[in-house]
Image 1: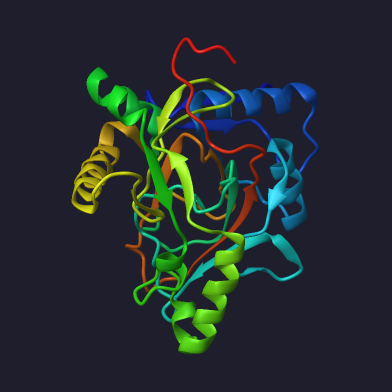
Image 2: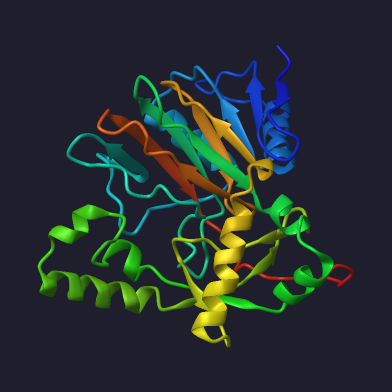
Length: 293
């Protein structure tokens, strides 16, 4: 059967029908799915009863995979993050964000599979950072295009109120050693506030409320006011799509032009997801309209 693409909203999201991800995709199917991701930024597959090997094989269609530096992985599958929440492990990353922007080469995208889902709740929202940028005034777009943001991991994974609570059980000495080890690999990282997508040449906002800690060459008060305004703007419902997970749902998204928010309303029910993360080949950059390559 021919693959069907059903847009979910005008700006972001599409359902992909008539495809079985447990089977090898032919060239036409693969090309159709890859184009759907470029066009819709996040794509949804339902009723895909596949194995971990199938998930990794499918994810590699979109690029090389990487292992998350701090989050546990699925046993025997280091390239599959295990995102598990239950009564003893409450969800903690329920804020708008783009993944691992503290890295010099942040993740290009992700392929997320629902292994166990709650009876109700636990939806995920994605927002188009193209739409968020394009909704700004020309004057503000011009101002932001010359700014650089600073991104960091320490407060997220090892801060007193960090989002990954398992690291709070470390002794002060263990935490200090882990931070020092991580700092050697991931020093404070700078990315443009507005980035140009390398595949589409469209501009997208590229700051997020988890990893972005400030704006370079601005006073702290100025930086905080600007970032707070952008975070409120990013959360505008018209830029968003909301997906209700069912067991064996799979979602693929482009981290370079989206942010996402995993709702924590289901706790203390169980929610288990496996994520393959797509690595990026180049640093985020900004190229103004009309500039030659």
